[in-house]
Amino acid sequence: MTALTLSTAAAPGLRADAIVIGVAKGAKGPVVAPGAEAVDKAYDGRLAGVLETLGASGAEGEVTKLPAPSGFKAPLVVAVGLGAEPEKDSAFGAEALRKAAGAAARALAGSKKAAFALPIGDAGDTGAVAEGALLGAYSFDTYKDNGNSGKAKNGKAPLAEVALLGGKPRDKAYKAAVQRATAVAEELNRARDLINTPPNDLNPQSFAALAQTAAKEHGLKVQVLDEKALEKGGYGGILGVGAGSQAAPRLVKLSYTHSKSAKHLAFVGKGITYDSGGISLKPAGHNETMKCDMSGAAAVFAAVVAAARLGLEVNVTGWLALAENMPSGSATRPGDVLRMYSGKTVEVLNTDAEGRLVLADALWAASQEKPDAIVDVATLTGAMVLALGHRTFGIMANDDAFRSALHEAAEEVGEPAWPMPLPEHLRKGMDSPTADIANMGERMGGGLVAGLFLREFVGEGITWAHLDIAGPAFNEGGPFGYTPKGGTGSAVRTLVRVAELTASGDLG
Image (cartoon, rainbow, N blue to C red; front, side, top):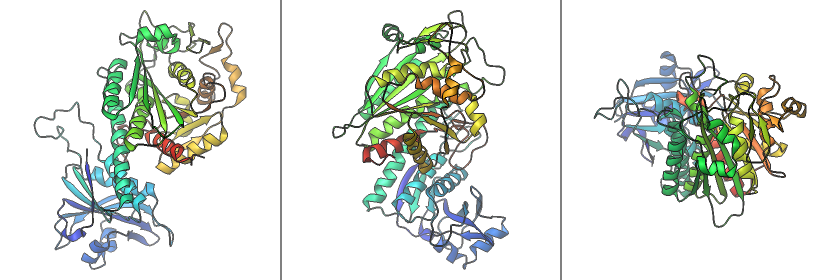
């Protein structure tokens, strides 16, 4: 993991491989952002002109490298675009800083140390830059030939150290901001590692074992229900989805408690470690990235551990509904009826609509503890990707105010999200002649239908929200900002922020 330090050193005298500065997109060309005054002075105040000559505009994510001026101990200056120049008396937002820091960290892969002289106005800005740098420096090289060099074959090691210039090393607020950024980023990167791990190495049992190890490390309580316990408890949804796999399903409960809090949040994550579609087999071209179908469980896992590391004054329980959805002679068939943990029966019309089945059991289990609120996270429907694209997740809830609060929390931490409805008229489409409900309804509005299905398994009177992260959970395109190719860790920061706001009493 990239190391972070707060530094009061001046950029010219700092020993590093590069000095990172910000540049904004102004009305008449690039504008050097605050924090880079010493660098601009060394260019005789002409740095903006030099950057424009090199083709820089200040556009978001743009990276321009140029030799450092005479007298600097660092050989390189890296100018990273912050986007549009803010209006007079305004500052750059936290997300602009996160993205710029992430882009710079990615561009500096292979470097030992970089000094970030981005515009920092307060401790919150410092946290944003720190978080962006740590997330941007992420690399998943576990399965590449590392040899003895520490570098991936044909690749570069992540940026090793970041010095944050303009920070205040002895200021409690600044130190706390860096500590928070480190905890959140490390756990989010843990989620990314889980998502990127191939399914031959990550199945329900191994995922559960990792949760047990983390629980021991961070003082969490953990309970793992294996296939025998699931059968004894009547968890028909999780068992039904996992019936076709040689890797038996698991339900993992991770509990973080704070002695001074009576508030209780439950996070529920879909953890399909590989989704073939089951008997309703996915067509060719749709299977290759299905190791990411446990992204919801990875997000919940990471968020609970982050809450523990931050010592948040709130009780958080994470439920990881883990199964592998495979076709075999023992697999659940279209037309089968499953009796769920709640006692309701479900007619399975499509075995590829499996995520809602494992979540239904976990939601009912979470409901039995009567938490103040439940939030589930899942790569649930392709329909949500069609509706919102690859970078935005949908939010559904049984309470409008809670949905709005979650939306605000997501936007605050830089995770694009959008509130979605739960239209009552779509519920009728899931009526079944042979069971209490079917796992499929109308094709149009499929993401909303899935939300309505899940609502059926939330305990009466419990506030609940559903995050469908099918779009942003796995990035099949090129990296951007602090987002890598592959697993992204979508929703981790939203869940952590919800826990923080609940702890402070400021949610909604």
